[in-house]
Length: 334
Image 1 (cartoon, rainbow, N blue to C red):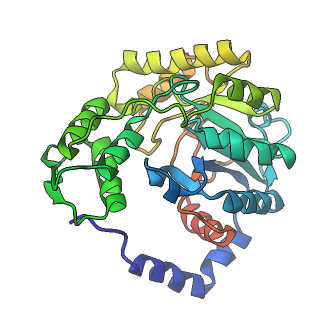
Image 2: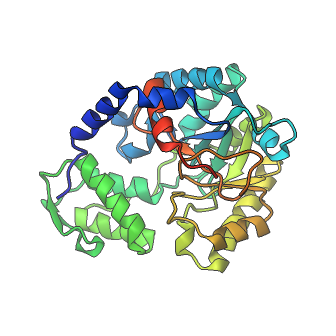
């Protein structure tokens, strides 16, 4: 059955907080690199697309950045790559953004610049300056605007669902099933639109940064990295397809932005979304660093430069909730 996360999850978190364990672990957190990754910044309730891709609101974002600045030495990507000014006995933070949504420029970059906080923006080169609607947003739009009383999702192993299901809960479940299905994601998108009785939505010029925006990021001394060309799940591609996605993105970004692109963030980025072959191809393509979406603290100097862990900033966290999440998920060291 598809349903929202039960309230007992919040009760469990509250119970653990009452023990004081998370705050003790935070105070004693190990030295190393803590990467914090954001996606969209803004009001998730205002979108007709995937609300799950929003990290936090603008006030929450500003609060989190100011909190992290007090707690860590926030470093730039070039400083991390160089390594000569980072030591193995300090706590560093790296701020990153995935996907290249316009709010990353309009909201996040302006605040970071005014507060002199470095960051890395990982851009899918196909999305920038385009009217592209990525598969996850297209699926969410179809479900949110469905015309049919029932939606047959048997091809994803979800059976038939009706209109009594909460749209956001259904979207989360369908996106997870789509990623795990191994079915071509464009095929999934089109099939879901058909089952929802709507035309698959393919264009919207309001979602992503323009190339002018991306050039401003470089002008403002932010780092730009690759998020591949078209944001596929790399583990589902052949070696040749992986190589093409990684190389094309690097070539386009470097040519359009006149900057060296030294890092890639693997799309989706969980343990099932990239492979050893993908890491090898990233290195062969000329990248120096590869970032995952697996939580953890990276020991310095970096032991594995193509599997750098990152903490996701999700679900509108307060600094307190972020402390809790990092404390409870930060046991892994790479």
